[in-house]
Length: 289
Length: 292
Image (cartoon, rainbow over the protein chains, first blue to last red):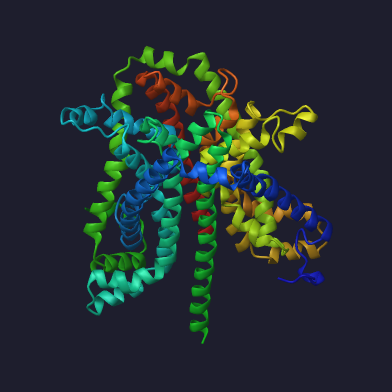
């Protein structure tokens, strides 16, 4: 891109006045709506000093909420990683009737309100639901305990890995993999040595996004959790409880942990895009060489 | 499974390729099995509970619940706030995408990275943060209250929360289209002396608006269902600043599962219609571009 375009290559919005006006508005929006709110989370958490922040984070209920949240994410991420990879392989490597419907169906969790998602699970697996009443007879309770939290979290996060993989795998095509199979490699070997290296960064980012949402899900979890302190309280629910108790500094202490995960997610995205761009450049220079 | 419906429309070349893929690559059965099992168990089975709960109600009961004045007020608040938020994002999302694609300036990479913050930040955290900033004694609220503007605990607060959580949609749908836009027509028009505004309306916007509309529709759909960010800043006053998601939540806390399900079925229907409309719209628009 030229900083000083020649008259023939002048484009819309090149005049310095418009350019710097638009850049100014963009910076103002970003600072006002995104950067300051992010800073405020950490400033509020530190509002009563580092000692209070440490006390807040080491509180037994906070520690339990952190543990439960990590536990839920640890169960959710591998499940959705397996599902997302299988679905992406299916819809990008084969053509079959209903393929487009499948691609649309996995977007349902993005379109549905989290509260509705939680309600769906509560109706089916709660005491009055047709599965839940049977489970209750077997002395099993899924709702208002951790299995329910895991189930709704799997629901709200299931599109992320597939959504990252499908466009990439579509674009890359399957020629290399077919060659591998024709040359006698097993399916597993083809996936490990050909597919995986091509998609690994998209896979990493899919996992990062799944994890971010799994850790931060509020609405759906709120419906099925029962909010029992020290038992079914995840970190976002804990933030809400503290906030409603007017323990603002405590709420922001827990919120700052979640905001930290969000920042790491953004950094991971930057890294993954940088690696992908580098891999693409290398591929292009190899082709021209 | 038969492949008649798909291959019927495909070109011979494409059919050859599909048939070859199907013969060569392994894992069709396995990936189909995992995907169908997962989609049935996680996505479709839970819908049966809602269907059963709603079908157990008589039509009059259903109608009474979903047209309750307080619930109707919540529809109005939700739809109007979502419209305002997605209009805001349509304008400023387009501006952000434009600036990120067209100009070089210090801090550009930071802005590009920060645009995704609303997707990465848990909604409850966004909610308490915005409520704190816009409260009467908050960083923003104290200045706004001096000029008589109140945002926290009013319907405007709902718009702010929705606009925040759905900000990335428009930027991320418009950005790739702007990047791909060929400069020839635009440069020709500019060199022939057309004004910037004229070229934007006649050359750039026609190429841009399908993506812009998709982004706005995604932002609107997300805003309709937003819960976590909204409830902290809305004030949640009946008839004034209650969103429909919250109404469902309130009915659940009253253990009125039937009423919660009835309202949820309305919300779910609207979101599914939006989802399928956006999908069809994108498919049609892509076909038009590829057909050129």
